[in-house]
Length: 74
Image 1: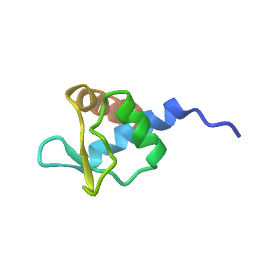
Image 2: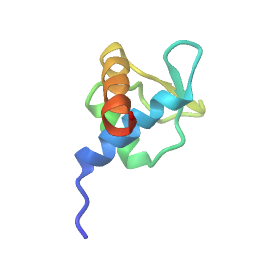
Image 3: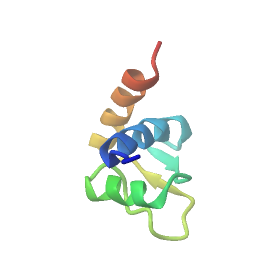
């Protein structure tokens, strides 16, 4: 099966909303490739490093909320 990395990125970005703490920080417990793509798209801070969390950018925060509602809202 071929996977669509954009769909994976959308799901990961939506789920990052669930781990929010301290404003726009969220736990970086997802696939590294997806996290690196989200960083390259300007949606999160650089996930490489010792910190256990990343920051959602302003655009990332808006898009994360929208995707969470679209993909998982009832």
